[in-house]
Length: 280
Image 1 (tube, one colour):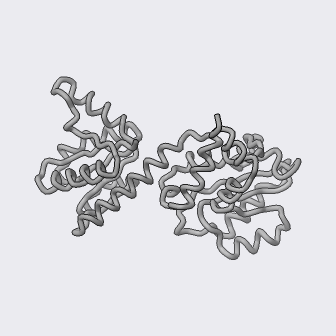
Image 2: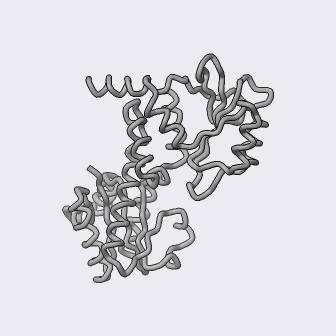
Image 3: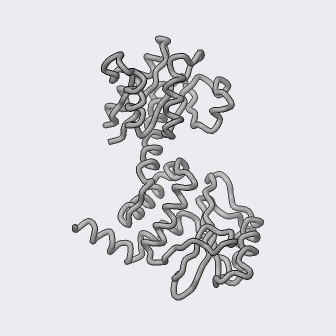
C-alpha cells in the first residue's frame, strides 16, 4: 500500500484543502500519515521524522510563512523522500526548492485532487522499483508503457540500474567499461559473441536526442575493444540523428524506451523467468 505524509499549514483554507486531499487519497486506498498520528508531545520531532520515513511520498501544502510546514519539509528532503509542493503559485517557491515537483492550486478542486492522486501514484511506483528483479523489470516496463509519466519520475541512477538489470534479464551480461572508456556499461554477449558499448540517456520526453550526441557517442567507440554501440534513451531521436546512425552501417544503434520494452515483452528468456518465478 502506498503511504503518503501530508504536511498541513495552520490557515483554515489550506487545512481544509489538505483534509480534502487526505480523504480523497484514503478513498483510493492510500495510507495517509500526518501530524494527527503523533501520539504524544514527548519527542514530537522524532515521531514526526519516523512518520515521514514511512512515507513513499510527502505532500507539502505550502503557504507563507512556512513555520508549520518548514520543519516537515526539511525532514522530508533530508530523508531523500519524494516531495511534492502544493502552492498557490510558482512565485511562492524559494529558489532552493526549484528542483522539487510543484503542483499549483487551481480553482477546480476535483481536478487538483485528481492531479495529486496521479502524481502520488507515479512517484510511489518509481520509488518502489529502485530494486529490480527479473520479474518486475518486465512488469515495470509494461507499467511505464501504459503510463509514461511514471518514467519521468525515475531518477537517472534508477533508470540506469533498470536498464542494466533489463539487459541482464535478457542474457547480455552487462559489465563496467574499461578504465577511460566513457560509456555507462558494456554488454559482453549482445546477440552473439559481440561486445557492445551502451550509453544511457534519461531525458524528458518533450526533448529529442540531437545528432551531435550520437556523433559524440560514435567517436567514443574508436580504439575500444567493442564491435558497436547502443545508444538508449527515454526520449526520441531527431530525424538527423537516426539518419546518421543508419549511415554507420550498424556501428551505432539507437533504442528508445519502447524498443527495450518490446524486447523485454517478447524475449523468451525474460518471459520464462517470469513464469518460473510466478510458479514458485
